[in-house]
Length: 344
Image (tube, rainbow, N blue to C red; front, side, top):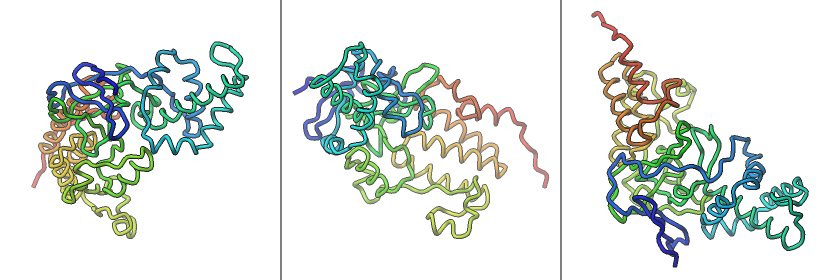
């Protein structure tokens, strides 16, 4: 039995029933608290998906031994480990990598026989750990992908109680409580990051990617479900039969889009989904309110988004200034824009 490993206000425990690590709160944590700010154990720069494993091999080849040892400690669920044994692609990638290195390790020692086999098997395990436990750094992996000592041990829930965000200014992954967390409560993150997927879509993705059968309330209670967003801004909802094909509300005015977005905000709040998706939906509400000429409502939604954003990622948001991606800058843009007096 592995003893708990304490890290600040949380600790890592081994859960025998799922054969995996898990993270638990060692004290009460208030919403908005920064639980951790982690430097990646390893970063794989942004590359095409087909090149990701070979790039990871290159990075792990030159990584400090201490970091490699910490990565090797990250767990794989039994189902994923069994799948990995049958994955010939990873095997071929690793063999090809060592061939490119002329069968030498990072110290220049020649590998053959049992030593070569051991190196190949170890690197294959590390590749599988990376594929399952890595996280995108920035939107769509703008800054690459990384593995972390604490975050990579956090388990999934469709109704999480923490949120992670990579801050390129700090060069760290920040983890904030998005709800009040009690002492002894397990820390959960959302692996999928799409609040509008159906229960069936989430179940398929979780099982096929991570071997997970989620048992959170959003997956087990019939009355808890999600609402799909309208396609309004891009004009896609004007396509013939769009609504019937995609099962997405068809709207043609900002007022209609605002009504649906507000309903989505209501449902997210009801399910405690204090997430980036809620931030985005609040932004949509603010934009739609501006579109229908309701500046005060737009300001209120912008302020609400800023308050939520602070609890999700903190206040170091210089990297979100471009294109007004940060709530602070969106709010400032509305305030600095003169209101239009409508004549009747």
